[in-house]
Image 1 (tube, rainbow, N blue to C red):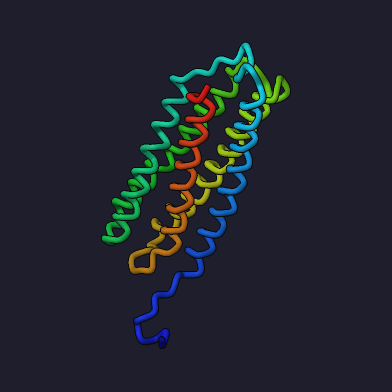
Image 2: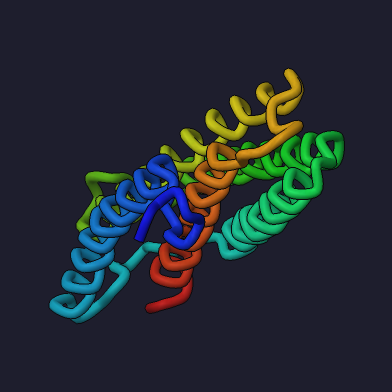
Length: 188
């Protein structure tokens, strides 16, 4: 097929790159989940005595991240319709919710009745939630860059490949959190 004939669809290199990057990140988090469930399987009591996590704060943080995933979808839709002001507004909400999630995560760490060095559970808790928080922080930084680009008039015309790549990353961050949240806070 002639690539210029319009018959062959070509994946944008940026989108292919973000997909490969997210696949590697998925393997990283899969290793953390494997470690968690392996340790859970060999320990008679998991989590160890004295581990009490606040479901209210973590639930609020999870809800904020879920809403931010929804607002990111609205950003994508607004950009596709060339509604830059709406995209800017929804993106501002997404960033604020991401920051709110980080504040709650830091508070959750501060009230944990154990530390990284207390036991294997503590090590995995802080490693899994800490690496996820770093991903959220990176996402907030990239979302802020996208917000600045929109404010400067980018995306008045297509392509929206950069915005789509950022959205894929943010959706990934949310999906990974769902797995971490269910694993750490609900699976006992």
